[in-house]
Length: 119
Ligand SMILES: [Zn+2]
Image 1 (cartoon, rainbow, N blue to C red):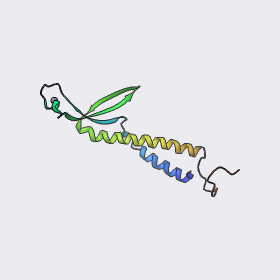
Image 2: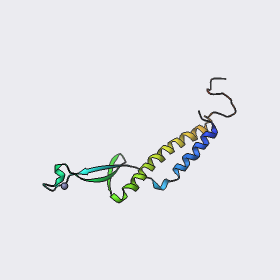
Image 3: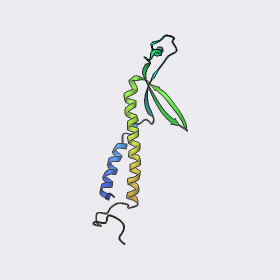
Image 4: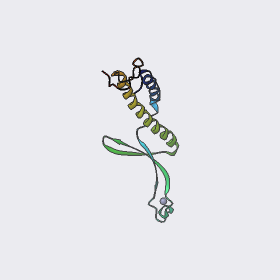
């Protein structure tokens, strides 16, 4: 169990991760190769067209997707990663705040009080 001081430090660090909130995209980025409808095109011999980039996400229970223009791919990838990190940070922040609120941390004053076994 962490001390109150350590939890507070962790909370500050997590809040900093959340500060970049304008750069978040919820979804996942995937790469795909496609065949076209042109008869005799090389894509039917295994040289498929692509890569194409697809952003997919769920919206009211439905799976949705959209093509991402190649010049936007690196930006989208970064924002998708940011979102994952922010979501984890938010979850952790919620845990830290709960521990702080309920006093579920190791007090600096109670020496060696590792478990709550003593009366
Ligand atoms: Zn083709």
